[in-house]
Length: 266
Image (cartoon, rainbow, N blue to C red; front, side, top):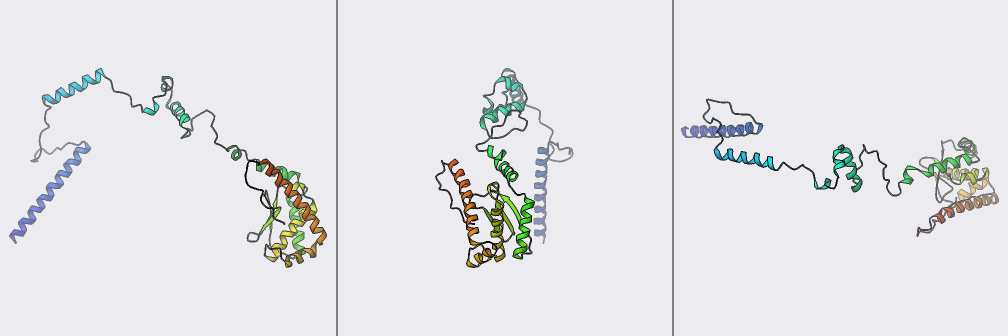
């Protein structure tokens, strides 16, 4: 038992020593001095020796002869003295103009736009759509009235919306999930009132049958409201206007190797 007690006592002393050393190191790092005068490990501060004094004198002489260099990086060495006298913002502007890495918010100079950025800022499509709406023979409210009339004829009670959007290959389309009819906005000013009615009727028949296929059931429903001869004439008008519009855009893009996409029949 005595042996165990002795061993336990030594372990306890060792742990205390380790903690004292750690605390001493922490105080030195913090810049605090050890103020225990009665402790065994306390030692008075050592006076600087002759060698240390000589070293300090040499360092002061060197600094007087050769002053310390400024902390200029190699990146900023190309800047002239005129720019160094000015504010630091101007210095960063000159550096960033050559590198083109960052954009300084305080710069008053003109921004260099990226390639094809003119289309993003000045969106021409929106302007064209506005012009087409003005030149169209029917407003959106008039289109809604036509839609409600045809819905009553086909006995459709569900809500259906109309959207005017530019499309490349279609004159009109319908989404059965969202119950929305999209009409090509770029063709509307050229279309007559009869053609617009036919487009809306065509899409509502798709919605009534809940299918996008042109089956025999589809043509039966359609020819009950419109004759075959009239339907074919209206389809020819719409297709010719679509082809003219598509060929115009294709001729503008002669550099593109792709062929014009096949136009879907409404």
